[in-house]
Image (tube, rainbow, N blue to C red):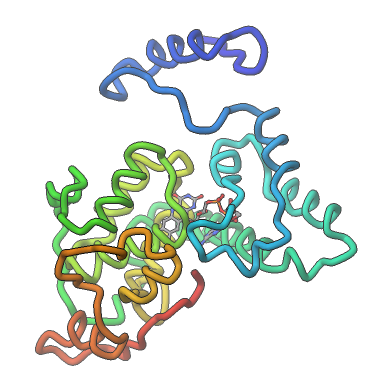
Length: 274
Ligand SMILES: Cc1cc2nc3c(=O)[nH]c(=O)nc-3n(C[C@H](O)[C@H](O)[C@H](O)COP(=O)(O)OP(=O)(O)OC[C@H]3O[C@@H](n4cnc5c(N)ncnc54)[C@H](O)[C@@H]3O)c2cc1C
């Protein structure tokens, strides 16, 4: 079937064509994507994105990020195009886009990792740098977004409804999944691939392994202070639950990793690559 997305089909016709094309692949009615698809929309998003405050603000949920990963993931933009456009636009002040290009380089590195490791990237690349066992199920409270923790359920609702999560939310959720729930990163990575519009095999699996410490020298985890600060207290204000993330990094390290076994050189990851 030939699909000409950019020219002769209305959104309704595109949805209809998709529904027929992927009839056995999804449940429910087709829905409008949160971002317009296609090459023209991708180029417009690239041209409109103001990266001048990216370095200082990217870790904050309220700060505008580019959302270009969705277009990169689906081949609507290439990494060299994004890099060159940013370099051209910020030629007079290259330091402004240093952090943006660094993140793009991570994406490039993860694609090389996938090329190098192949299917092995979907399995532990190294032993975890802790000795806490993992359970490979996806618990129903997570699958349904009903864990009872407002922040985690908020992130899950956002994932399910929009197909997007900010990088910091991805890190927090992955740390919750692996370290606070003791679950296998592969089940979490599968959940992300299922719902993220930019879900892929390279950045997704490599990032989950980075959080778990099977592709990094230490596990990444966060505390409540970190979530409250970078989310501008989005969920913490008025939160009534007993917060599992409350405590210093030193206290949480003991709680998460020192369960009667000697931890393997665990160092608290405050920000790391996030
Ligand atoms: C657990 C976990 C799972 C992830 N899964 C995916 C995934 O399936 N697909 C995906 O594309 N990215 C994934 N990422 C990386 C990152 O979170 C997204 O690329 C980014 O949040 C996409 O939003 P954006 O385009 O607005 O990014 P921006 O912050 O605007 O960044 C610009 C571009 O740089 C690249 N980039 C930014 N942050 C990262 C990062 N931490 N690692 C690698 N590249 C980065 C992306 O290509 C992004 O489009 C994951 C990160 C984590 C922690």
